[in-house]
Every structure is written in structure tokens, then in C-alpha cells.
Length: 192
Image (cartoon, rainbow, N blue to C red; front, top):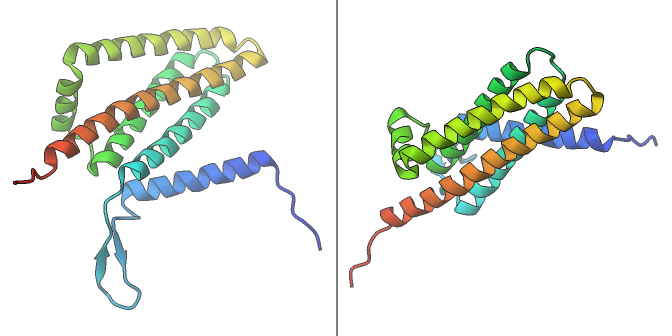
């Protein structure tokens, strides 16, 4: 009997793809909060995700986006590094958008963005965006220099993945706190 051998990298990639597909299906609504009973044509409503499950799914998203940023930034693209950083910044925004959708079970709208900015503080939000944009632009220019060596592209990938992970973890910590505060405000007040 012949045994199939798998490279550990292949196993990790397969696990990443499975996780990615599950997360995409769940976020797109293919796996909804409703389950069908096999015996009947009725719909059974399942309970809302717990905080722990939301945190785990968010961490899986962060890992997926960080690995994607690492892979994308590791490929040398001379003269297009700043453009690649813009795309990676858009991916970071998408990551935060998906984490928000996971926690609040709704898509982010203009009203929600305004509310989030009010909660975070307008000055803090604008300062964060300016610093992040400057850092991504600077990193794009540094990538042009790092493309001159093979090890430089690997370093570039690791740093890009790390920065995506840090953005995701920072947003997760903030949205987790905001969601818990919202749940306290929505909780019924017991009357004695």
C-alpha cells in the first residue's frame, strides 16, 4: 500500500484555504444563522455567535490577511512598490470592515463609520489615518531598495504581514471593547 506524503507547507496552505473559504462563506451569508431541519421544511434559528467565537473568527481573518500581505509583499515588483502598498492598505481596511461585520452582523455604512469616528475621537482617527498612510508610503519606497536583494523581498514580506496583523489586532481590540460596551447598554435593566 502506497502512502501519500505531504509537504508541511502544502498542509498549511490547504488549511489556510479551507479556513478562508469557511470565513468567506460565513461572511457572505452562505452559512447563515439559520439551519434547515432535515426532517421538515422548517427553518430553525440558531443562537447568535458568542463573544469567544467572534474573537476566534476575527483572529482567523487576521491570520489570513497577514499571510496574504506577506505573500503579496514578498513578490518583487520594481517601480510598483508604492502602488502595491496602496493595495495592501486597502486590504487592511477590508480586514477591519470584515471584523466589524462579524461583530455587529451588519455591513459598515456611512452612519456607522461616523459613529465609530465619534467614539474613537475625530482627532485620533484623522491622526491614525495620516500616520498609517505615511508609513505605507515610506514602506513602499523602502521596498524599492529592498528589491535589490533576495533576502530584502523576504524581509519586506514579513514586515508587511506583521503590519497587517498589528492593524487587525489593534482594530479587534478596539471593536471588541466597543461591542462589549454596546451589549451592556442593550442589556435589560432588572427591576427590583
